[in-house]
Image (cartoon, rainbow, N blue to C red; front, top):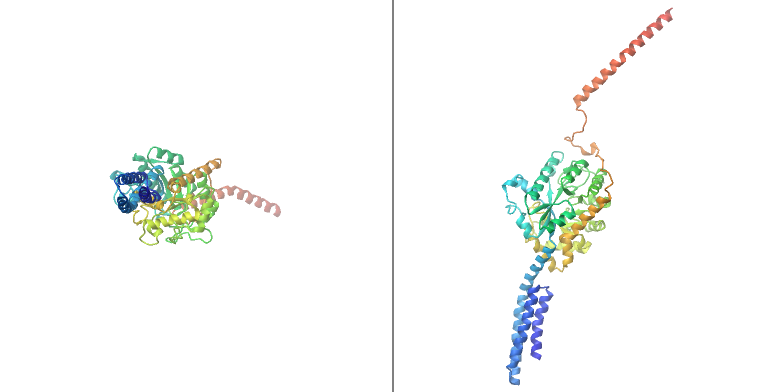
Amino acid sequence: MQHSTAAKFCVGLVYICLLGRRAGKFVLFACSCSTRWSKGWVQTTWQKMHSWKTVRSASRSLWMNSLSHLVVLSSLCYLISGYSERDRTHDLMTRYPLIDGHNDLALQLRILHDNQLSKIDLHNVSKVATDINRLKAGHVQAQMFAAYVMCGAQEKDAVRLTLEQIDVVRRICTEYKDFELVTSAQDLKNAEMKHKIACLISIEGGHSIDSSLPALRMFYQLGVRSMALTHTCNTPWAESSSKLYNVYQRRNTSLTLFGKAVVKEMNRLGMIVDLSHSSWGTALAVLNHSQSPVIFSHSSSHSICNHSRNVPDWLLHELKKNRGLIMVNLHDKFISCSDKANIFDVADHFDHIKSVIGAESIGIGGDFEGAVSFPQGLEDVSKYPALIQELLQRNWTENELADVLRRNFLRVFEEVERVRDQLSLKRPSEEQIQIEEVQNPCRLVLRPPPILRVVLSGQRSSSRAQHGLPFLLILAIVLLLSSIFIIE
């Protein structure tokens, strides 16, 4: 009986080891088989024992064999559990596929292919980190595609360029059956049920609306559901985290009165306010003003990497009060503050943010195609499962990761729509920015041109002169008659 117990104990250690690593069904089956095999082997050995000497010899043999089995099985423990973690990650991401908050594929299509979709196949695209096949491999079920134009277009043709980028995103999402263009939280859920990759459109940079609320509303009509207030340049009404462009410099006005009107109108429309690229002052002002939850669509932790694009802990606490979301950026320089990073560095950002505001305020915004270098092991959109597996190994629960993968974004989107519905009786804002705030020589004010104003002014003067002649004539006659009577 001692020998059977010993065998069970040794094999049980392996079972505990494997179970402790949260192995999958395969491991449970293997352990169960190992236990049955050991019991049968012990019983057979016991039956062959005919004397106490044989028993003692068999006992030593049993212990040695059991220990050797334990060593062998234990050495396989890491390999087996590693496979099971991948299986577990796959199962989790199948049930809760990713909603990625930021991708600049449209920008790369313009740079590399001049937006000529007829010349490429989006299932497999070279020189980029995003295509349909890799989105599927990475379990990406919804992608926020950015309509981005560079800050150099501010005060020039930013609106036209933004329209062209929205056009290419809409074409991607309607010409390929793998995609489906969505404009609501319910659309997004429906797309998952149909096994489609949902496309959401965002605008990256408030310079795209040229300080015009009517332009903002028209972008919403075209399907835009999120806008970052700034990019790497200030707008006339909001401040960027970057000092790259020396434009619209202000003091103590991170968000002007017109900027507050933009946020208010976005709340009324049901458009998500995105604070990535905004200065901390602008972000705080928005958090204090917005009625809806906001997002940082692609930003990371400033405590881990002190880059101005990242979010400090004190601002994370304000985001938590707003019920908003920070979607972690994967770009090397925002992860490790250097040109090289790895998957463990990325996981450190998740761990830290969770410790500050909880997993219910975290999402993922990879920033693929918008940055030039990404961590080892996360080089393209197909590699997202490796990140989720690393977080599982760091004892994140499946419930927490389900929030990070999609449920948090859906909650924010639904709350933004709820506020929109509450504000449905409010009329569209007619707030206009003061012309002196814009300082844009290309901005036409709808008044008559200067030459026409001179002509019109001359015509008015001539008209007044003509209307004045009869009066002067009568006055002269009166004066003449008066002088005659006085002489007499």
